[in-house]
Image (cartoon, rainbow, N blue to C red):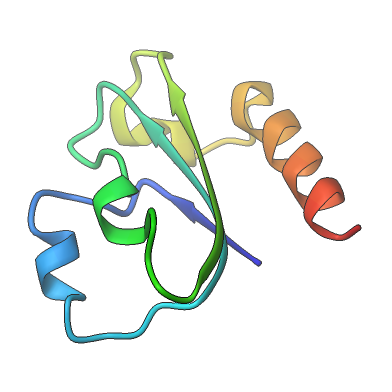
Length: 85
């Protein structure tokens, strides 16, 4: 299980095109950040066992990563609990 936060940019899927990325993924990104959705990178891939994504609208760009805001901590904890079953 992997949580990805604020990682995917334009071209990320192209950069990883020759890599086999496997697992169950939860992507979190802030709408006002330069990093965005990881759908192109992870959704419907051969060895991706699961993919969920949370788009935040906090207005603080990449700053959403600098503190444990409840807007992403609670959903992440719920995903961890669910994925562990």
